Image 1 (cartoon, rainbow, N blue to C red):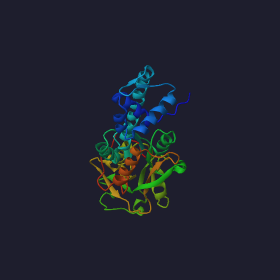
Image 2 (image 1 turned 45 degrees about the vertical axis):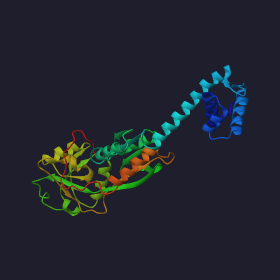
Image 3 (image 1 turned 45 degrees about the horizontal axis):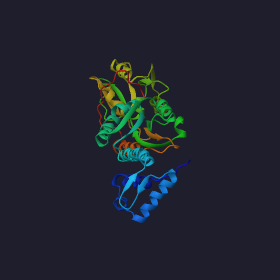
Image 4 (image 1 turned 135 degrees about the vertical axis):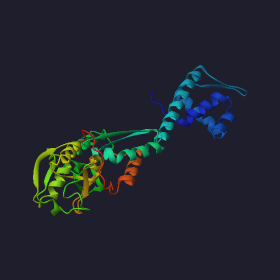
Amino acid sequence: MSANISTRLLYAFVALAELRHFTRAAERCHASQSAFSVMIQKLEATVGARLFERDTRNVTLTPEGELFAEVARSLIGEIESAFDDMADYVARRRGRVAIAALPSLSASGLPAVIAEYRRLHPGVAVALHDALSDQCLALLRQGKVDLVLCAPGADAAEFDARVLCSDPFYVVCRCDHALAGKRSLRLADLARQEIIHFAKTSSVRQHVDQLLRQVQTVHSGFEVEHLATVAGLVQQGLGISIVPELTLFQFRQLDLVAVPLRAQDHVRPILVVRRRDRPLSLAAQSMLALIDRRIGTRPGRARNPGKAKPGAESD
C-alpha cells in the first residue's frame, strides 16, 4: 500500500492521542473541530483501520491506534531532528568545508583565515590540503575539496576560476651581495647574475622564465623543488633567486635579503577555483567570502623575508 500521510495528519493524531479530547486537540493544531475531525477520518482511511474509539464522553486509542502511536511519534521525531540538523547547517553551526591550496598560501595566508572562520563557525569542520596546483585541481575534480587556491594552468579551464590576488616577485640574495642594498630592482639589474631556479614543473619557474626571457642571466646549474633548498643555496653564495612574495616568510635567515622586483606587468596571479557543476554549500560560501576579504588583495606587504620551512616545496 502506498501511503500519503502529511506531517499535519501525524501531528493531529498525536495531539488527539495525548489529549483524548477533540476540541482541545483541534485548538492545539490551530484547526476548527470539524476540520480536525476530517483530518482524523482521512488518516484512518489512509491507514485502513480505526485508530480511536469515541463516544460522547471519551476518546481512546484502539489497539491499532496504540501501535500507530509508536510509528507516528517516531516519524515526527525523525522529521524534527532532520529540520534541526538542517537549521544547524543553514546557521553554520554544523558542516564541513575543504580547501586545497598552494603550500605558500597554506602556510602564510590561509591559517589566519581558517582561525577566524573557526571562531565564527566553531561547529564547521575545516580541512586543508597543501599541494601544487595540478594536485589541488585533481582533488577538486574528485570532489574531495570545495575550493582551490592555485596558480593559473591549463588544467583550470574546466572549472569556474577567477583571480583572487596578485603575487609580485622579489629577488632573494645574501646581505653582502651587490644587489642587497637596492630599494628595488629592474629586470635589467639581473643581467649576468647567477640564478638558482625552481623545477620546471612549478608555476614559479614558468613565471620566472617569462620574466627573464629578454635578460641575459647565468644559469647556476641548480633547479630544485624545495624553498628551503633555494634558501640554503643562496645562503652559501651559489647564486640569487627570484621568488613570489607569498614565499618570503620562508627565507628569513640572517644573511638573506629580499628586494622587490619592479616588474608591474609580471606578477603571479593566484586563482580561486571551484567546480561549475556543483553549487557551494553555505559553509563553503562563508569560507569563500572570508578568503575574499582577507586574501583578495595583494597577499603580503612585509619587505623582510620569513623563516624557511624545511621540506617546503616550491609552488
